[in-house]
Image (cartoon, rainbow, N blue to C red; front, side, top):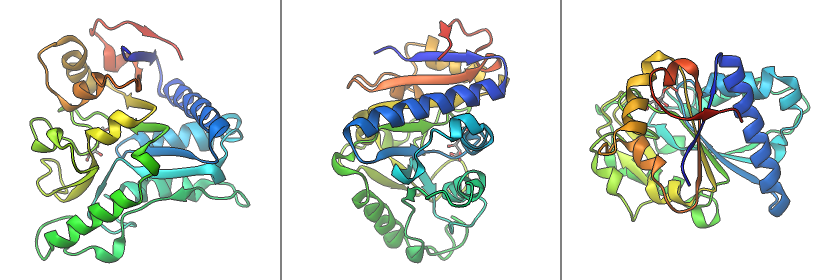
Length: 261
Ligand SMILES: O=C(O)[C@H](O)[C@@H](O)[C@H](O)[C@H](O)COP(=O)(O)O
């Protein structure tokens, strides 16, 4: 299935269409299951989700939070209340803004009690414990490691999750969650989904905004020889529905057919 690109002139429209898409997939999932299994990323996605699901009351009113099981496509080896924590970001942007009286989603975080060292840096850290965190997180994945939706960001270098260009984890097939000790982007110690999890998802949606993304999107969509991680996600051929929600600046000069969701 070729990836679809949904483009809008402003951030609010991007956020609102992401919100509508999330709710549509939630509703589809809940027809056949008692929970909606979604994985989130860090970066600017937190703000997008806040705009879409909290600030937009109409979309927000259609979210069945109590049926959500939330995971993170990657996470940093930092306490959950640390500014670098992807859980922390989701908590700050979304969870803490849920209207009172609303049942909260079930959120799957790393086991903070196994953290060693400081702020995801190496000094004083214990690799064995980091690997244990990855293993535990893997065990908490939904049955058959099947997500209904994985929301991803795309770095200016083409990375997604904590899968970086030319990194050996791009070829990981036996672990579903891997520990990465050498993230080129700080902090260096993280865990990440691997391709077998991405390939098994019903849907994957990227959110990318700003002119700074145009060069990498040109590579991803127009350079057939590129092996960038986000391009490899675009090429997933297991039936996963792949979408991109972008603003016009992110695809400026990139000859990619766009539409509206
Ligand atoms: O790996 C990280 O450290 C980032 O958080 C990253 O995963 C982020 O999702 C992308 O860089 C996209 O960033 P934006 O969402 O800000 O475009």
